[in-house]
Length: 202
Image 1 (cartoon, helix red, strand yellow):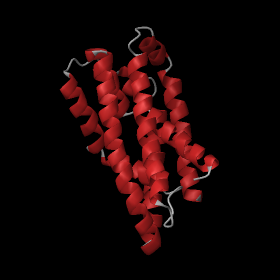
Image 2 (tube, one colour; image 1 turned 120 degrees about the vertical axis):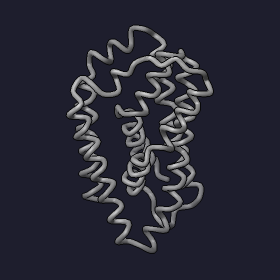
Image 3 (spheres, one colour; image 1 turned 180 degrees about the vertical axis):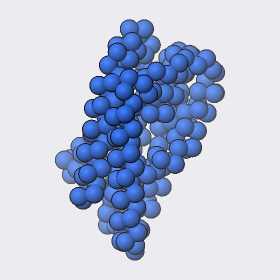
């Protein structure tokens, strides 16, 4: 995979991971309620769930592209519509959203369970991956290239939420984020809308 293509993939994965939503709220709750270790466990198991969806998407998209091009276009349009919906939702969130999460005290086992369930129990996540990976998957891709895509999604997702858990261990960070929640939501919304337009334009 060319470096420029991988950098584009990494940038979009990072934007998806960083966008405020239920995953961020989960890590915030467990970090604030159970400390650094609970937040890290939730982040890691969430990344495992993301990897599962990425795996299904990467190995399924090639067959769809090759044998059902019309269906693939339809899936891509649905994915673009979902990205646009996420962008609009972020723009309308104002100062609310995931950054207002309250602490939740729980064991490491509960944190692990919640991280996995939030990823696997969110059908919207696979729509995001379809919209994202449709830009990078081709029928002739090798298994190594597909594995690189999956690992990129897992490492970036797990890395980002681990950083969130580590950062929130310091009491000054969350109030700083909450004070700027409106701008964070606005920037995220604009970026997601731009990605939706890119998917539609191919």
